[in-house]
Length: 405
Image (cartoon, rainbow, N blue to C red):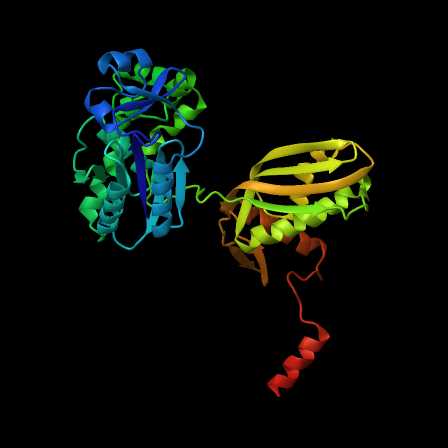
């Protein structure tokens, strides 16, 4: 069983020891502890924050991870390989354990408390899956959650789901508590949709059952049909691990005074892709972002491509980069670099098989099995001597006779 921890930081998008806010497009995106204590909230304008607390320090939201967030991610990485950093100030981490890891989480928050300054803290939710963990943190900012546990570890805040507290590692986890989730804190819905639902008297997740699917579809689109299913949460789940951020690079350089023709670039690219994919497969990972840099006698260039799913085989990697290869000009190739980033671990999937008439077939739904049976019967009538599955060779049959004596 994997228990999920979702943490949302306060004051971790800047390094300042006094009251401060970080701003993007004139909107407050983060505020320090003392700024929040003064009443400042995210979403306010800079003018509103300055009128509430004159002289408050204003910082621009950074494009890169701050030292505080880097410290938190490194701490999480030491206890679990399943870490997802959600920029600029949040994270998911999954902890495999047979019982809820309450003591481990409290020890983790003590490390946070010692490494962050007095203006920084995290509110963390421990729940049965990633959605529920994030819902705990959002819900706790509005009201006290019935049956949930709320604890303080120094400056850090911990919210434990009602299902985990009731279970204590014994029996099945009950996730029914999410039905009382207030839709005013539903981050997965646009703000105008929340307002429309509130005017309809729909304030909790459980209230959505009173709206027909046709009404939801006509007013809020196809994605609204998924909202009702959010009450049926299954423990476990997966996160998209992205920490530590991995990057792999391979390079080719022409020998001094011996330049390769540009036409050889495809062959060189295939060789580099093969080398790079061997490394990715060794660590059981695939890359989403592919890029290459080149230099010819007429100059250099760069091409970058974002794949829809992780790439870990040479041929798909070369195919993704072929458009960039067509942009190369010149007669002599001097250098070529191939690199990948946004590396993701590959999830192993155990294939199921169906034994039918001494042959194995991929496991399929009942309808596909029935169709497979019909095809088999038709082939058997048309070709009576046709044998399904593998048959023993002459050497195997002879060995079998010898072994049976």
